[in-house]
Image (tube, rainbow, N blue to C red; front, top):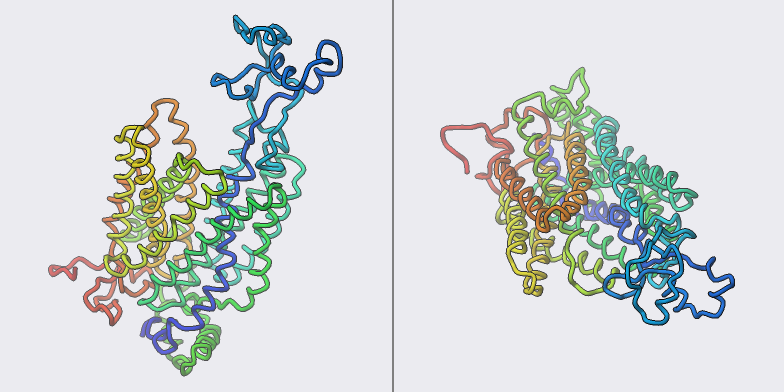
Length: 550
């Protein structure tokens, strides 16, 4: 008996599973709101040096505001407005007469702060702490610090989830994200804010990985794709909502509280979330597993699950190799096929994440305001997810993962080769590339969950999340290489996409394969480890035989 047999008895895709997806949708919608929050709270509005102290009297007294700006601030090269970070060392009154300053007069940095254009934002991090000019990199540094917290959280919560259960770890994630998320809105200094954002990212990671695993571990083989893709639509919905929230809430402190608030509902509904019965059986907790399985059967209007003795037998099998030891991240590399799986999934996750964020941060040319642009980028993801939903069931996970990455790399190369004048064509290609990169992200979440066995699944997801966050952190740095060679960032990102796509081709297919539950299922899979709907589909990491099952 396998766990899928039990799910068949109690309905592995019924009202119970759909209710769980709904309960987990609110916290999952919060994730993109925080992950992409820097697009708004770290924005640097147009600004110029504050010359208010120069107009107290004297020659300035009879000048209009426009004339004061003319004699005090150097104009931009294109003649549109004033330079943001410089002012004349001495007033240039001759500019009022002939408009020509002759030889460039000496300038110095702004002496009395800055004046900001508040037409788009009431306040941002830049306006709050004057993070402009020489300090402008500090606004983006908060994003890197946030993702460092996400990276650490992936490791810690992956370990805690496998040791103490998905549900308990999810509660800890909720509380951590709520406390530090709201606290960051009241930060009184840049350093305090950066620390609180780090801790917020730490907590949010636990929500991401636990919600995905809980959804997948309660559904039968046939409907894993549907649950995975529908669940991932929460990201797109949250991403689009972020544009609306930011449009309505122009103050950065209030915006942080607004996007964190839905976690309050998630906390209240936590008691209705079931623990993973797979995890309970894998850890020998038969009575609790029986409780949740009976609850699922009742909700789905099916007879109760298998008898306690059958569940005990299944638990004994699944805990055999776990006896007298706890699984750690070292178990990901202790055996040959697990080492291979760990290496390949790490490469794929790094490539998927670096490519997605590299494209997202570099696509321009829509001619829309920041809110509408963000909304369009988010909306593009929806058809990409729906497309991949059908392809995953027809083509399979491996080909979808490899294909989306390889085609993303091709789109980037095409844009490098196209002349700048064909901006309409370049925009279409860029949008297609963005959609494909999102499709690869949707695929990799489901694919990775199916590849790792239950006993180390959270450790595996924690490890791949770390590689993903490395890719996120590196993407902005790659874009800075534009100063070295204009197309160098695109060349690097396309190369990463293609290499990770080729690595995906070396992974096993998991279409209709049973979820592996122990390390032995990876190292020594049974030949009949496939669902009844596809008897010819290979098990995860099938043993090499003289006759191929593919």
